[in-house]
Image (cartoon, one colour):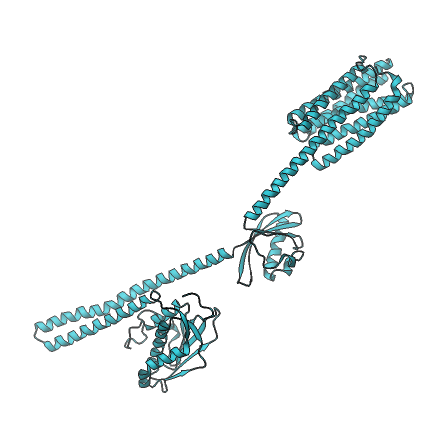
Length: 592
């Protein structure tokens, strides 16, 4: 039984204990708000209970045990003392599961309060001595707190990740020491006063919880340091990932305003960051791109699902293509993960163009095979047929008939030779290409006109050069073949005109920057349905006409090998024809 002669010391210690309890409770509550570790909240509650008990106990001692009010405050202090047990029990349970379950909370709170009511009530109403009342009311509370504190020490030792550290050992050691101290104090209230006084246990009862709290604070600080270390490692990892992936991040708010920009390595935005950060998407991107982005961003904020967005933007070097993934990062934030896929798009376009070109070549090869087999078959049939006739003529003694048959055979063989020569010439185009250089078209035209002068004069064809002809890039020998073929065709098909006229000139450059030239005649004209057919292999609108029908095929092929194209314009029979072809200009021509 404590000596009440030390009442003044007890009151002083109680006041100090109450003040420290409130301060430490507030500190632990703040740590709980920072870390969200539930056991800190319950340990804070235990300190607040200790403070309330100290205030009530000190007030009771100050008023005196003989005073009714003093005894009432003593009963209040005893009742409140019971509440330390559920606070420590909840802290122990939270260490194991992260949060004490509702059943555990009810059992601890209701059971402890019921016990307090029973023991304190019995002590208040039973006819007993003061010492008996104190034993009945106080000793069970100490027993409960000893059990709860031991449970807390065991839970911290087995479930806290900080248990093996010095801070953890401090918590466990002081918790067990505090449980032993409370056991001794409880025995003192029961009559076995091992401390032999009241001041020493009061001071020890203040220092031991402070030791426990010190260990807990050290543990929290170690957790914070570990969390910071892991956070730095995570930030370093994320930074390395962001630098490694070919994606750029844009952070936008609910109003579609650019808030943050994290560029990928080597990524150069079309607009400097200072010109788009803090501005709306609609003020930076083209209207159609901005509208689609705003629509997708609104959907992302509403549904939380990731939305893809493909778009293109004009740039100095041409159109650039982008793929974006829009994701919600907060209630009012959208992250746009953007990748420049211009190279992939261009590669896809080139691949599609190559596939289309291959399909075109395959179709041409199929037509070529059919046409060659068909056109070569005719002379062979003629040769074989008239060889039979010649044999019969020789056998019947008809040399004149045999001579006519051999003449037919010679004519068919000559035609076959011409066809084979033209086919060989067509096959050489693109394989035996000459050196590309700047070619003044006007000089080349005058050279071809001079070469065909005799034939043109015989046909009565007037050649007119319209305006100043430009300079192109190409193989002059091959380009001479093109002009010669077109002029020969024009002379051939204007012979029926009253005043045959062939005009050579140029037009504005095409969208690809190529020079466009034309050869126009006032001859027989071409039906629009035959505009493409005339460029086919061995195609002749006049089967009886001269030539093998491969000239325009060769001319178009030469132009295509130079990177241009050839086409014909004609309103129909009797309206003349204009053969147009495009060639690279010297300032746009690639390497030979």
